[in-house]
Amino acid sequence: MGLDALVYCNCVETGRLTKPHPFPDKLFINEEGCPSIPEDPDDANDSTKFLAHLNWILSSPCEHICLRAVHHRLSKLALVRAIRAELSQMPVLFPTILEKVIYSGSHCGDYLTLEDVLRVKTELVPLSQFQCRDPEMEPFIKDFSIQMAELVERALALRKPIVF
Ligand SMILES: [Zn+2]
Image (cartoon, rainbow, N blue to C red; front, side):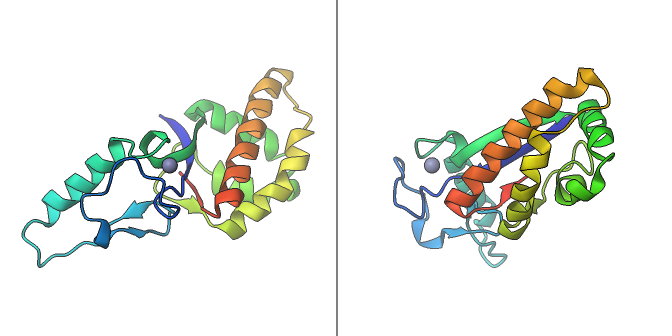
């Protein structure tokens, strides 16, 4: 168990696929920034089509693995708790990171909107300079800081959410 974060690429939008989608006319970009197809309860082949769609994503139909421009394992569960304990000493500096990124060590299925991402961006500077109470935590906070900076940079460049 741990916390993963990713930003989807925009190869569908920019026409940089190396493998065509099985139902290109149905393709849309969902709120997570991921290409998806609509559910159609009236279509008896709905689940077959969705499986074909998922297999298309898993086949990495562009230069990125599974349409992911960046994907980080932020941390293992216990470490997320330890990072949270450190940053909670200065909650006013890290409101978005504490409430929306490391509020739990294993959340998934939620995401940071571009507005949230811009807030996290302002929290990256104090994060990069953070003095740990426990010196053993310093390399982990540093890693976390570098990974968050890369996720934020990619999300803003692609104008996509950061997905957990
Ligand atoms: Zn791509």
